[in-house]
Image (tube, rainbow, N blue to C red; front, top):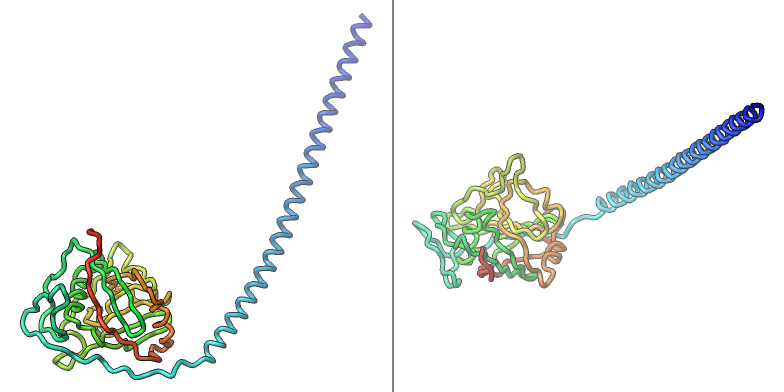
Length: 290
């Protein structure tokens, strides 16, 4: 009996010792975990402090650079600029406007009594090749965005409306505005206006105007209606144009870096430093069908 009691006592002591050992191990692990967390928190604090300091330095540098750029910008004056007269007129059409010859053989006509009928194929895709005095562009005309305006553009191009007309305004990084013609009535434009066309989807209005976009300029500062003047977006500041701007195409090709050259001839105020004219606008069918 004594031996069995002694064995039980030894077993109990061994269990207590094992329990104490396991408790010590758990306590040690807990301390290690706490230490690791403390180190991580400290490291995060240090990294955050370093990043904050770096950002502060960068912000100060950026502010300094911006201030320098602003000072530099204000110290640079545009010019000298030139005075650009409107383009000279061509023939006039009274009564209904007939569709021009698709091969471009119609005589130059710049005055119309009425807007044109539908002269384009809604299933066709049209490209416009614009030759200017500083190079050429090729635009894909987006009939799906502005079908009536694209049709009007094609008609005027085939009547050689813009041949020889100047870019009267070239605003650096924004737009080049051209195609100003005085019609037979002594007024700017072809003799009629059309409603603006732009995307309206819920709260979204218009499209993003990227560099190389082709658009129609408003016929007057107080109206969205379009006439015969064109806009070519030159840079990222074209996104500041009203969302009601009628965009009719997007540049496909600029083999001579004409967009950059034209932008270089502009000023912040819009006065061009060199005369740039539209030599011709040719309409060609794209090799694909919609």
